[in-house]
Length: 212
Image (cartoon, rainbow, N blue to C red; front, side):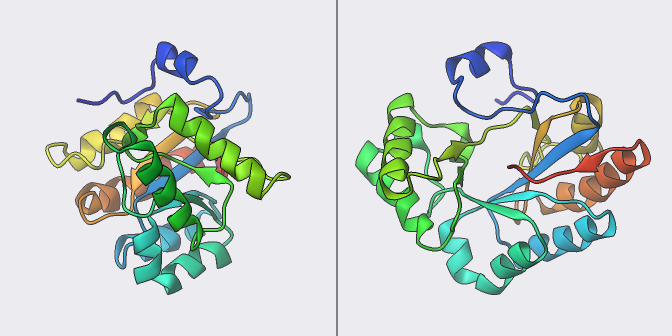
């Protein structure tokens, strides 16, 4: 069970998290979770380059260790990276110490002030611990916890590629933070939907920006 768009009450419960951007400009924020992946991530980088689009890749630490060359290409292509834990842990099902330690293990390989909790599941206490520890280590660069306003649903193997595309086209508005996944599980829907999302919104004057 998941929601394509984030309801107001969930945003209100975590007001310090970034869900979207308030803007009247035609700007969208594409984000990709769970990479780097040896097939999906290079495909995305090639597609983004065609439209001079920038994006944000929330990487799993163990995947960065496995594919350091792809991770480096993300950075060299001008995109941003973010921490997505080392082992894709669910904060609601993980004790606080294990969770915090896992995030900082990933931070050894992902130099970023951006963090997205896997599944979007993190307790307020875990978030405060992460932000406090980041402030101690990097006082000039506080941790930003990034969520989303639109889920493509590409991780859902029961979803058709066409439905995945429509989830984005019908729900993305200026300032939207959109989630796709550069993973094997999402690959069938990702390779269909992403080029069409880039084409559709570019034709309508939108720019794609990285999270700042």
